Image 1 (cartoon, rainbow, N blue to C red):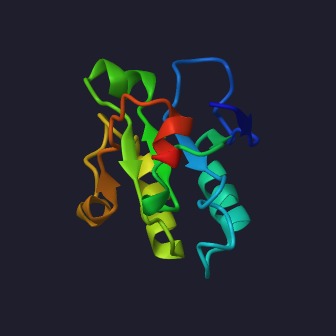
Image 2 (cartoon, one colour):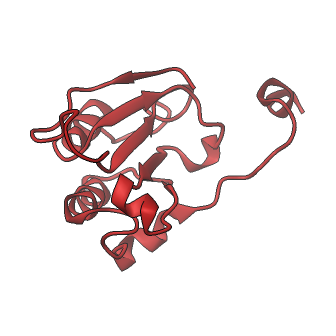
Length: 136
């Protein structure tokens, strides 16, 4: 997936184990005027204060816009954690809940706050190529 990176937060340099990371979808639906009432730039910046953020093109789950994926740190992955997909993240409180979880260590390190269960979803695994899935 093509992506751009925001500045890494303080202390998230190349030394030490890989930190928790965040992917934000910012393409056709996520990060666009289609999702009203959200300051997409502020949301991305706020998350980047706590973890490295990658801005991705379409993650192909447009019905869940705005999509944020929290990837576990090296320690979280060693503990068995997998990336957590969060959808409909369309208000500042949800963004703050994600930021607090990431600050606490994220997947595999800190328990996911109950409130984030409202946003968690499992992306579909469609064997069709992405272009075929959009035209079908």
